[in-house]
Length: 391
Image 1 (cartoon, rainbow, N blue to C red):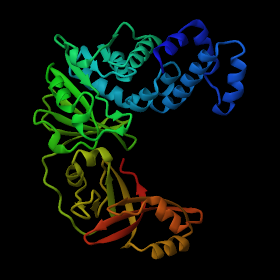
Image 2 (image 1 turned 180 degrees about the horizontal axis):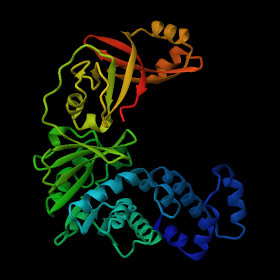
Image 3 (image 1 turned 120 degrees about the vertical axis):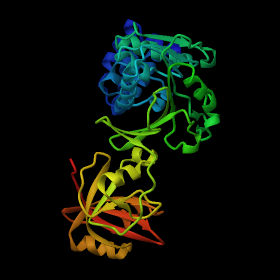
Image 4 (image 1 turned 135 degrees about the horizontal axis):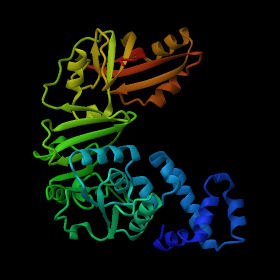
């Protein structure tokens, strides 16, 4: 989205077009565009349709706010999910932050969440289109009084006097995702130093960051939303006793630790616990194993097993009905005998994808089952299970 297109959409005519496209169906776009171009400039109609498409895509991240916000294509892809941004904003507020510099702010999703917590935000980005969208979003959501948008190189920003810095480096280029942290824009090393310049700092990074890249003075937090790991954040100045944290949204469940030794491996018991992805990324599986009095089924696999059902908020529990060596033919026969047509497949340590296995099983019938596949030692197990609630 070019800045000029956004400015045109902010005019009364542009606003009228966006209102008309609020609930449009993509399948009707050609006929709708033809009709609208009879009364409006073709470029404005194209800009409004493009923005309407972006808003529909953004609803998965921003909910109802997306209907009032303005987006760039990159902004939709790279913005923080609203639930995650709100969690981080609550953490900043709890740490006493009242003035914050949001570096690499993009279209302003994090700035909005921070401002809603009463934090005054300086939102900085070098992309003029992103800055225009951030300013428009602050106005559209009634937060202009708390969000100042500045189009500049973040390296030139003086953060003296701010309580906190939040940096969200770009991890994509026109060629795709960037895996080398020093190829982030700005580089990881620069962003780490930025996080140390104020009493509190936070740096958003990819969830797969190696633990040996986490600085000794940082607290590393992995965040999942509905079981899907969304990001990792390096925090500075939190004075946290534990360096590793896993946060599970939407229930604000947080597990800390990281100092326990790896639990022992042992035979598969009656129950299997699958830790949340954020727990696994944060290397806190040992904390879950201690909580449920369990053991690993293999030293290198993040499945915990126990002979009893124990309440835990950090793992999904399954009661096992069958534990057998993995064999597709045997599994297909079992499912056919039991009339299983719905199969939820989970796996660790196998190259076969759930889709490939489901195609080979050809399940049919009224019943359902969870099939858990795992490497154990030099072999592989298949475990038939049903999910159970632990409260």
